[in-house]
Image (cartoon, rainbow, N blue to C red):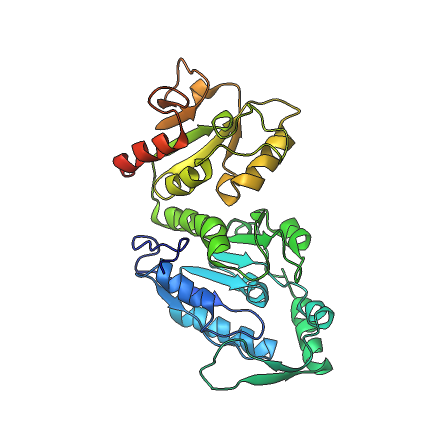
Length: 334
């Protein structure tokens, strides 16, 4: 059966190296590695099995980085903790376990443990004792020690809002401003990867390639029956989420709302709930849409002097989001 979420993007990260750093008790043969290789068929995904001892694992990762010079590093859970330390590279830390020793004790990761995925050395189990937990504690005490202003622009932190295993968002976001919550649990699945991690990878690849995509502004009033969504109970219009997921594949998408003082938080909260990562740092509050320079403006409001091509939502031509999907599908990214 065809996977409804995972798609291939042959042009993204093409010819580049992606280093994946796996989590605790996992390996380089995890489902995330398979997903990365499926989504980016023209990228070289490097995924070493990490030693159990943290100093050995970090030494191995330093060596891999020196030899391979990855264009992007993605680390999940414990791997996110390691990825944060690999300074000098673009990195995405997903549900980073920045207090690994505490996590091991709190969630019963002691005693004899089974590896969740096959490893190249054939080892199937390992043992966690107090000495090993102490090693991880000493490792995490050195978190953020290489942090500087440049690193803060190269590290993205993504944290699932239903993660019951790791909760280090506050610690991470205090150091790295490019941190956000996404809808998901501790373990990434196809949906959370495609909807939340994939947009960030696209932004990174665009920046690395100095790629300029056509710009689409979306008036928030066109996403909901209410001009200003006042809470999560205000549901989005049919097909608008599908449209946003389609549009971000070809365009640089921004969301526009009126600059009303009492609407900032509720609007941002609504976008976080129903649009997610694509709206993160891509929301503009303004009363002057006529000053927005771009290619298209999707708006339910009549705009007289827009500098972008107006897509008047609700008009005879664009009555629904399905009409907008069809229109932009014909344009093919133009």
